[in-house]
Image (tube, chains in turn orange, cyan, brown, blue):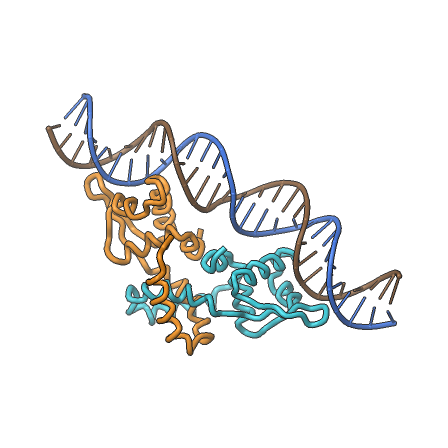
Amino acid sequence: MDVFEAIAEPSRRELLDLLSERERPAGELVAHLHKLTQPAVSRHLRILREVGLVEVRPDGQRRIYALRADRLIEIENWISRYRRYWPRHLDALESHLAHNQKEPTE
Amino acid sequence: MDVFEAIAEPSRRELLDLLSERERPAGELVAHLHKLTQPAVSRHLRILREVGLVEVRPDGQRRIYALRADRLIEIENWISRYRRYWPRHLDALESHLAHNQKEPTE
DNA sequence: AGCGTATATACACTTCAAGTAATATGTTTC
DNA sequence: GAAACATATTACTTGAAGTGTATATACGCT
């Protein structure tokens, strides 16, 4: 699985978003992704680790996960060539962001 | 299927890259993606159309496909929050780009 | 109308991703 | 050492996603 496939799954993007705030133990991540069971989250974390998007270190019984954003540059790499299509969308982007933040999440 | 899932498949990214240069008829796209059969390319084009990343217009027997980059902003949206992790990677990014362009494509 | 071309769709199949329950493994606490 | 805790892995089911082949459909030309 590559970086693009890794982020295609919404749960893994959510994990990355959580870790972009700060490193967290696995259990905390499980608590946030309440739509999934603990084994499901564990599997997603494993995929992210294998792809190189997170790293983990033991802390007693716990496993502390941290973001490792280096390979996300591959996404940046690819998407950057499309930026020229929306030079006037920056305002729209901000509106878009505001709109998303207001919408309720089902 | 959403935008992230759409670009997870390398063939579809390749199609988008080709169309970012200029609009092209379906047959030209098939000719470029020689790893896939014509029906396989047609299915990928259909997925891209359904997700809203390309649009098509008839031109006699041919179908002319064009990029529609608006929804790629969702990728930009998401990846932008990770930019802060590589402030010093811009040079590395350029090196990375150069390296990729030199590598032979299998 | 028939034929050729361009391209979309149907069908059959394979692979594997995603989920859960159960279980295994390692660490800590008592 | 047993029990509790934290979390990874296994086994299994389901369904999605990918492919090639065959075929259908639309258009152009004669």
